Image 1: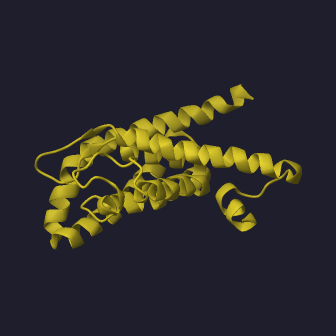
Image 2: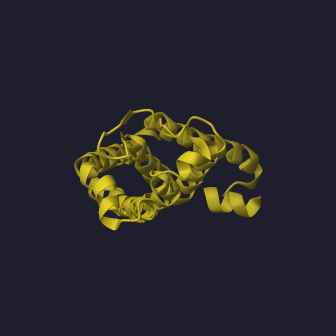
Length: 197
C-alpha cells in the first residue's frame, strides 16, 4: 500500500499526517474521475461514425494538467474501473456501458485515458506551467489518445482507412478547441495559486 501511495501521490514529507493526506489525495482522485464522468454526459452522436463527439477527453486533459502524471493516471484508471463495473460514467452508448463499451468502437480511446492523463501531466509538471507548455502537453496527450483510439478502431473495423475516417477527420477542429480550453484553464489555475497562498 505504501508503494502504491508513493506512486500515486509522491513522497510524503509529513509522516504524522500521512493518513490524512492519503484520504485527501484519494478524495481528489475520486473527484477527478467524477469530473470526467460529468464531461462524458456532454455527448453529440454523429450519424456518420460510431464515435461520438464528447467533452470526455477535455476532462481527461484537465485532470492530467491539474493533478499531474501520477494522480491523473490514478484518476483515469479508477474511471475505467468504475465504467467496467457498470457505473454510468462513460458517454451514453447503444452498447449500454460496462465492459461492452470498453470492447466497442470507442474502447481504444477509453483504454488510453490513463496514459493520456499521464502524458499531459508528466510533460506539464516538468515545465514552467505556462499556457504554451500546457498546449504542448495537451497536444502530446492527444497524440497518445488518437494512437490508442485509432489502433483499436483499425482492429475493430479491419481497416486503417475506415478507422481514420471514423475516428479522426470529424474531430480535429473540436480537439483543437479542447486543447486550447484545457490549457487556458490549467495555466490560469497555476497562475492563481501563489495569490491563494
